[in-house]
Length: 198
Image: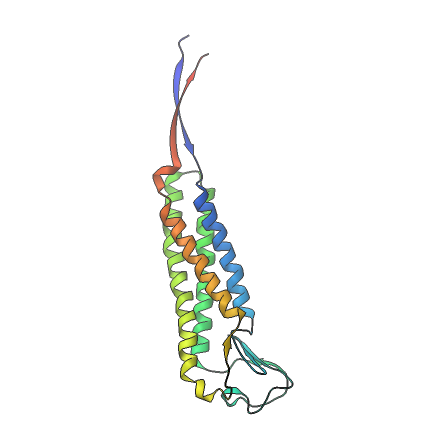
């Protein structure tokens, strides 16, 4: 019997897409940390987050932004529009990043190369939307805070670690977008000839 030649299609998962998926997971963790923290903005005796602000027992009065003094502890965040906008944008960024990470994972798992590319392409657009949302939140928050600085009743203000974590999430989002864009689709499929002798 004569040898026959078969052509095998080999799909190789590129490491850049796996790293983009991991970056998406890291962003979810970082955004959750930023959202639940009260350390976005700090001054003497005062910590402010996106959903609550905290006052220490030895905080000098009057409290920042004419907040009534109800004692030490944490209360619901002030009704400043920029805080609500920043919180909404961060939540939107978290949801869209979760969707983009899920799409990237589905693309990694898919065996059909056409389906795989569709997942990756949609994931890139959703991740770009997430990046824009997070960046807008990180810019709106300090710019609008600067407008109400005179009502702060404190001379020294600083941005806390949670605000920095938000920037960390933006950096990882940017990295994930670049990794998904850089990896070319054609590099994932290889054809291999094999001779079979029966």
